[in-house]
Length: 115
Length: 110
Image 1 (cartoon, rainbow over the protein chains, first blue to last red):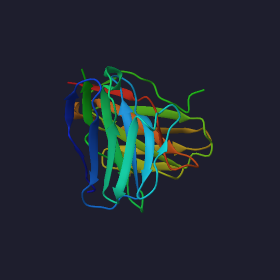
Image 2 (image 1 turned 90 degrees about the horizontal axis):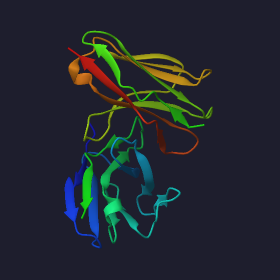
Image 3 (image 1 turned 180 degrees about the vertical axis):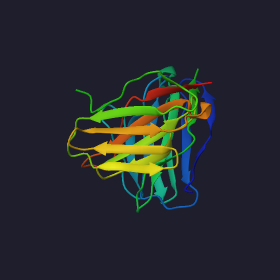
Image 4 (image 1 turned 135 degrees about the vertical axis):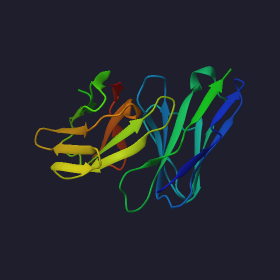
């Protein structure tokens, strides 16, 4: 079946630094990728929708200058959390969608802890 | 009114029983419906999707969709302890993004 990977799986960083998270579709080309954030005991919150070669569409309340998304190819999207602060600590999850869509495939997630 | 409503649970069922999970949605334009399972500390994994009214079966899982009443449900037959997880329903409307419910925690007890 379709597989999506994320790297790193967890990261700890100091406040003020930037962190890049990669999302790759391993065995299919993803027309669209999505980035979510999930705080403990809460549901998934969509941050942005990313299409290859175009600017990401951010959800209301998500700062596009803080959460930089690059979708350079049909198999790779990156999320960079710039100037991270403790309140950015969360579980970041990407998902990828094929053209013949029968459900988005989620990556394993990246747990970010900002000290 | 929330777009997607799910009982947060926990829903406890004995091993071997049928677990019934329900989800209601407010957008009548919703087109596609999905059930995801999420284990604690892990990302969601797709269990089933359903587009048309009626039932759709896949192994021990049956999804039921009733667009007139705006609800979708998931039945898990012969529940196993490994089914213990949070179940998220999601749908797409006119746009291309998934809208998730808050999830129902299922506990299957020995």
